[in-house]
Picture 1 (tube, rainbow, N blue to C red):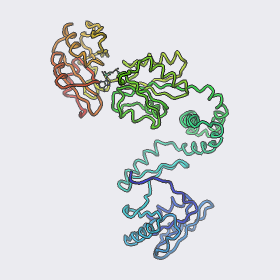
Picture 2 (cartoon, rainbow, N blue to C red):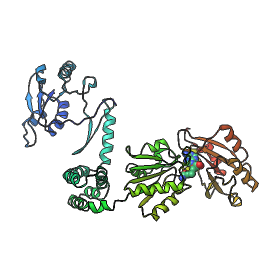
Picture 3 (cartoon, protein in one colour):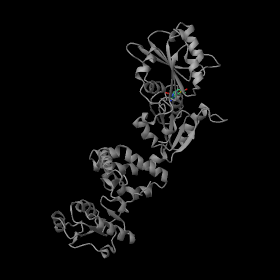
Picture 4 (tube, rainbow, N blue to C red):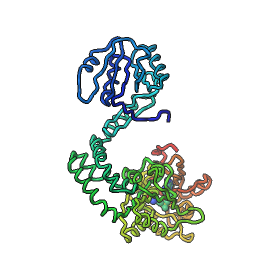
Length: 467
Ligand SMILES: C[S@@+](CC[C@H](N)C(=O)[O-])C[C@H]1O[C@@H](n2cnc3c(N)ncnc32)[C@H](O)[C@@H]1O
């Protein structure tokens, strides 16, 4: 970060503007809006600025015009200086003198002479968002502003005012900082903010008062909640909006080995992270352990994020976890994620179904129990379907052999996708006969997914993701 963004209180303070043309005018308006006492110094001052100086408003300080050349003494006692002339020599003189006196200075369109820059502003006063490209790409900053303008309803300003009105009361009534944070998050993300956005300010205020009055009752029964969230196969762009919102809200995060570090980096910064991958060192965390932890953390009043790779309901044991929560009366919600089959297939250019190739798709566990498979192989070799094996890397050879021995053609196309959807993705293409060798030679490492069926032959034509 090169520049530190700060918000400058200029109310009632002297600001010197050197220059009296249209560029100066653009900068004068925001200065007047924040209550600065603006003095213009320029031999020529345009009519728009002169007219502005003649307008009197109760809230604003009048503009003072000095129709003459700038001299160094003009800067004494100024809180901010702006040079907006087309004379580079004068601009340089203003900048040097201001910096000598340690007065913040902005020279329009000459970033090298500035000690401060004007950002693009999204104004939802009292909420303000300032965007700067550090003088490198002002057009980009303005485009970003436009995007934010359309994303942030104008009601945010009123929401902040409402919060300001209740701030002291809330502070006195809810003394615990964490509970206070949860209270405000609830206000800003729940039905009170919706009332504000739909222009029902009075109702919003009543509801906020009511919420505060009932706070003790709410606190007494304070029970956390568990969010069972699918984090997708790896690429963070594949998260759902809801997943992201809950990730930003959670106090504690219990995550698995398959959650990519890019996805994990999107959880709330101050959330507590608890790794519960089943291969955690010498002391693997058992499923019972995880179930207990979820209940325990929620009973302490936390919002607990149970973050899983892929989709929590596909080979994710999500069902067992929420059954345990339900038994213990803990509220929960489930957010689906993109499962490895969808993610890997898309990123490998292999459609899982296709009118000419496969009319159904099966998701199968490739995990062996006591080195054996308990699968109905004769059903798996039925024609016109795609088979997707999760957790099948160690059993790849056996899977291929079993399919062939139950009658599937040895030339049936098959693929193995390693670390699908990530920048480290690798795709191995072969058939039932050749794939195991190719994968062994390539040294593939988990996580991997196996796809079997004639859809795999489409990879050559449809592959698009650069590995
Ligand atoms: C315990 S299962 C969890 C599946 C997860 N719930 C889902 O919906 O994708 C783990 C298996 O998912 C597959 N898997 C998950 N992420 C993957 C990825 N990025 N690339 C390839 N396979 C993946 C692998 O087969 C891995 O062994």
